[in-house]
Image 1 (cartoon, helix red, strand yellow):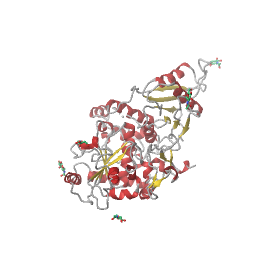
Image 2: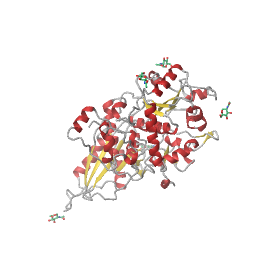
Image 3: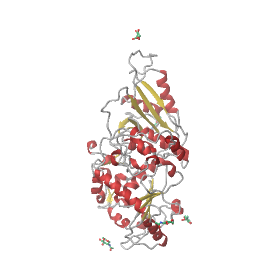
Image 4: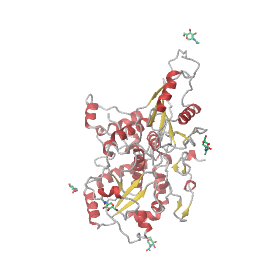
Length: 501
Ligand SMILES: *[C@@H]1O[C@H](CO)[C@@H](O)[C@H](O)[C@H]1NC(C)=O
Ligand SMILES: *[C@@H]1O[C@H](CO)[C@@H](O)[C@H](O)[C@H]1NC(C)=O
Ligand SMILES: *[C@@H]1O[C@H](CO)[C@@H](O)[C@H](O)[C@H]1NC(C)=O
Ligand SMILES: *[C@@H]1O[C@H](CO)[C@@H](O)[C@H](O)[C@H]1NC(C)=O
Ligand SMILES: *[C@@H]1O[C@H](CO)[C@@H](O)[C@H](O)[C@H]1NC(C)=O
């Protein structure tokens, strides 16, 4: 099977993630159950036709799981062979515990129907594109769109796609995806009988790279120049939701401005942030979000912070300190060569991902050279080490996506602060990771790590603005389910009620 992926946070240049898969001889029947990621269906790994032929040649029956449709999150309307990972992911992931709300499932089905109705080259799509070309349009057009522009590293792209999809769901729009250079090879089509990719002849394609805060259609710029009035009509608007966005761009998160945007048939969006937490602060979406996600933190089910990828002794020290202190891994016994035990030893498998192999080699050697104090056998694995980050390189992205997916299948996850790579793995796997604190001054922090409050990613660049009062405010203090992040004091993330302090 061909796997994929890539990452870069706007801030984060490299990352170390490791996680453990604890393999017990007799798996406990009450193994920790986890919430599914409600939006997991968007992200499945693609295969080539050749892989499919190879995989399917022996038998027509694909392995089945009790809950292949993930509690209804996945549509039953697909040919199973079109995307092996879609129906097989349930075989590898932990069982779902919390069920997605029935309202969420009905909204997903309704969205799929709407996407089929409005998708590329449908009558409605052709009509709306024609109106975009001519500049003459009716505000009541049957189909309105959010176009997600391919931008930034793979981890960020996954986080922003989820954000754009939820925004589309909340505003009854259809999400179309700019395929960029490698999106088509990375993800399966998520909606049946249609495509989520924007056709190559979409009239604005050539302008995507050009869209910026200086563009006349940039919403922030329109507000700045007071060109938005009740009678303004635009066939498209560019939304700039990047880390460098300004106070005018941030007004996107105000209900009042959404009234204007509602009328615009085409919203073009460029983002590199998981902006969902701020949608939860908008009164106009409150009821709908509450119905969709009674458990707030299921909206979306590591790191060395130096531009130099290391490896660094202080980071290795920190990783080991966290793993030993939190009893994720056993210590080794430097005095003894072997352990005498009649029992078959328990094994732990450790999967490490990092741009270089230095951390992996050191941890692996430690467990090769010495027995553990508990008698457990620890195996350490690293699938790839790319040396440095590369954007827009397909094989690099495929490896990164494969590693995020593998990490999501583990039992325990340890991540670096600020890592979008880690956010994707924890979100897909429904895992609450241990987060390594950001080292200051090249020394390992003490304590080395803490458990995350929730599995949700952190919004790194949230607005701090009270739309009603029209002044600055601490948006991490407004509602109990939107709090500041563990790994970034100014960031925002969703947490569930049982995490409220
Ligand atoms: C939409 O336009 C494309 C060509 O631009 C055409 O091939 C297609 O048949 C049209 N769809 C419908 C439903 O007319
Ligand atoms: C991009 O922007 C520049 C300057 O704003 C303009 O001259 C150029 O024509 C634009 N290119 C496209 C493809 O729109
Ligand atoms: C714009 O519309 C809103 C609501 O429809 C109304 O309250 C407001 O007075 C209008 N503003 C102007 C300048 O017409
Ligand atoms: C190790 O096991 C062997 C055989 O089971 C036994 O004879 C020996 O005494 C054990 N050594 C220790 C240190 O327990
Ligand atoms: C960083 O470490 C150096 C050398 O250990 C020390 O001189 C310096 O004061 C430290 N800086 C801070 C901000 O702690």
